[in-house]
Length: 173
Image (cartoon, rainbow, N blue to C red; front, side, top):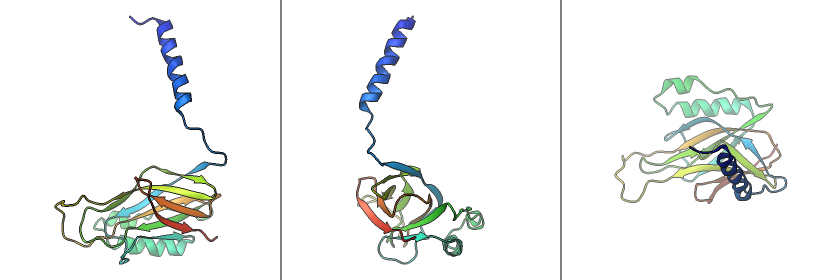
């Protein structure tokens, strides 16, 4: 049987080790929530290279979402356009560019972006299939549509899971 004093000692040691191992936050560093609005392997258009579009008004968002929805077989996703409050939020469309096979995808690595020195660092999973993988021979164009709150940032850097910056978007508001 474990004594209460032993439990208290273990808990104290764990809390001290957590404090020691936690990374101190940089002055001025914050984070903003990121909301997934849409993702698809086929909605990213005909660009040959990765691209990002900052959407600041409802009509452009509606047109973009309708264009994306045309490529999906899930009609529910097309009909249920997520509500975005453009007084408080903006929308970011990220496309991977056209790919020659299936197996490519974009996804959120976490539901927040760190903001440091007026730059929001948005972590994405930027998945590329391994060499030699057996894949469907179909042209894809992975994309992801995200909502971010307005904030104290004037640039967004899209970073993949390896820490590589894939895209950078300057925000003109």
